[in-house]
Length: 153
Length: 145
Image (cartoon, rainbow over all chains, first blue to last red; front, side):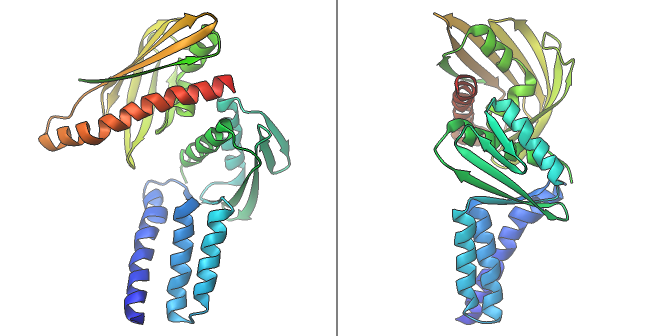
């Protein structure tokens, strides 16, 4: 049974790795880990480690997956933090959203705050917090993703 | 050729809606799946303006070039694309008492093979129809918000 679980997790890890990491890298585009896909990726990856080491680690796998899913964060790799900020500035300009910037924190249309944290080695952690639903903020977020993915690594 | 269309009233003056929608630089902001318009030449919109585009359809990157073939401000603009897919995008703008009715008509080539025809009819047509509708909804969100 343990062997089947390990092989299943290994197969899922390979599929998610190919989709989320290898595919963008093959096109020389940045990696964006976000939403349900990122949540599944980290859950499966840590669960794979758990299947080799100790069953308690499954709890960490589940917790990390839930954390990534519910905190609505993105992990972007392959682009400098300056380019990420430039992409956000361009997307705000394109959607004519109002923006209040305080250091690395942006507040769009008084409805969504975006915090960009530089993790080094061209990797950034982007945190979204919605205070109220705004179609314009959601559209800006979607265009922001497009503009990040337009960079070459 | 397959043809799809969508229209929507935007509560903004015709000139403002036209200026925004007719610029290729704004395309990726309101057209879903259009990742990039680059190499826009010249910057000033008008007949003969050309640019390169990159469109994502179901995870597949389609690329090509485009040319503005008709530019009648603030009433009509036509863009013809070539490359991985050939299409004609016609935007018309009608004044409706200070608001603007925008109509987007897209004509595109149907692939020759039976399989591609099937895929086109079943999936691509629906995707493109949804893309046209979503484009206008996004345009409304950007300009009215």
